View (spheres, one colour):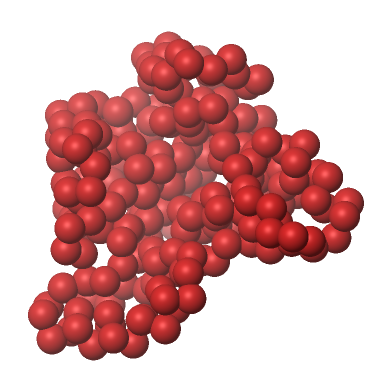
Length: 230
């Protein structure tokens, strides 16, 4: 099965009014003379932004200080944002829950960006079951995790507990969702990464290994119309 690949690059903003808006947003970035380089444009954020509509409610599991919300605002998408995180080192400007068990209400979108690899399998299954109950209608859950088929990716973080190959995670999500799409992700953050892509692709085929660092899964529930058609 061939899994499509999504690429992203750091964003460059030149115009002065955009520069002011970016500084005000709080999104992490670097100034490069007259340009601003947005470092936080990882593949999962860019992919997820294509599925999120203005005014929707979103629960970001593992939200930290809400950087994904700031990314969406910079890109002109305003949502009702809530987060789940155990970190107490910041003062949130959004509704923040300390665990999924504390969450109240229903959401259009739930995101888990590089969270599940910090959970055991039993914790992951328990959380996904809770998330399924927090969605309203036929909306979606977007999960991103390191691609363990890429050498060394999972071992880069000492806090990683459980690897989830995309095919296992696909099967797990199908327990709770009627449709799951899979993408591989590669962040082209340097010129070297761009020019090395053909070499990585060929080496990956020869060594039967993947060269993309992460996988993103978009899980949807069937709506009533889908059920009726069946």
